[in-house]
Length: 212
Image (cartoon, rainbow, N blue to C red; front, side):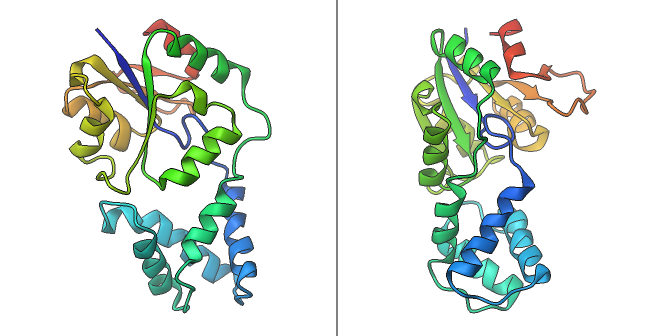
């Protein structure tokens, strides 16, 4: 019997928009750093490559990686400042179906968030969307190894057995396959209608009602 539902955050609960990377421009301008599109693209590449180099999220490590990729002497608090701007990166209006499914599920199960990112920023984004109230816990990967490491899923299960937990996310390789391999159930959020594998999936989160 399922007791806990574990949600990924970005591109699951909150859709990521590439325009959110404009917060890098804001951060560079905040420090009066001269830059071009090549520098900005290298900052984005540092973010994209981060998880292939580190198993924990650490601001100083990301800061150092950004310095390496751009050859800029970035301030030591560059990433911290960037995350403050990122806190505003949420939709202007939350989908009513998301509220509906979270309200439905929170009355039946414990809900938690498992996110490969920095805790304070993700908590504040959930607050701005007014959906933090639905979750018992938000687990970020500053002190827990990133998905797809086993440690992340075991931590997200809390006191529950793995078979009593289910993972909901948009990534086969970070959310679904590793969760299944570690004894959890899992449902792919295939909002782009691209996946044809024989796995549990939904194209809209409201469709979780079919399974839970």
